[in-house]
Amino acid sequence: MNVVTRLASEIRLMMRRPERLQFAALCYRKKDDNNGVEILLITSRGTGRWVIPKGWPMNGKLAHAVAEREAYEEAGVKGKADVKPLGTYSYMKGLDCGFEIPCKVQVHALKVSGFANNYKEKGQREMAWFSCEEAASRVDEAGLKALIREFEQHSMFRPSANG
Image 1 (cartoon, one colour):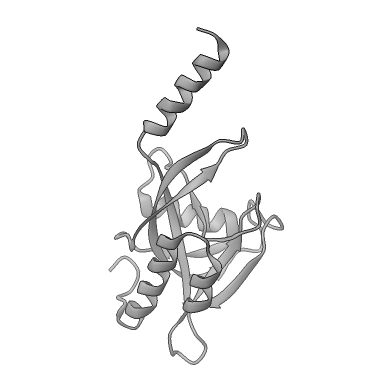
Image 2: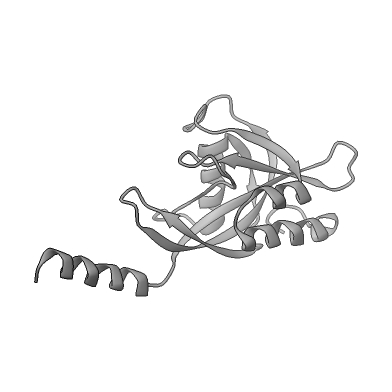
């Protein structure tokens, strides 16, 4: 099999595989006036797009614990993520080699209780707090936009983390 034929075969196989699964944290805090919530967005390191902290599964860690860890490593966020996910969204993840793979992201709400002074990706990303509507307008993925808007509608009735 020549290189081109083999590469084409591998690409077809890659496109048929199920979406890869990632876990994410939708980091939030109550507004100063206690009237609604704000969402923390960070920029991706590669493209500078506004995103939420997310990462790949980790051996021995539950999904919400992975979301907490990614929030800490990428944004220095301290807090507890809800065990029950808010929902999922899909996107195409760009790889270093130029290909894109489909990814499904399971999102967990994380109530921010503080920030670390030093963390793994400090200085590599921008961070900012946004109203839910503004956060939804800044992210690219339609499914994430919908999750943020739905979160805002239900945020006034949210139980405590892990509830």
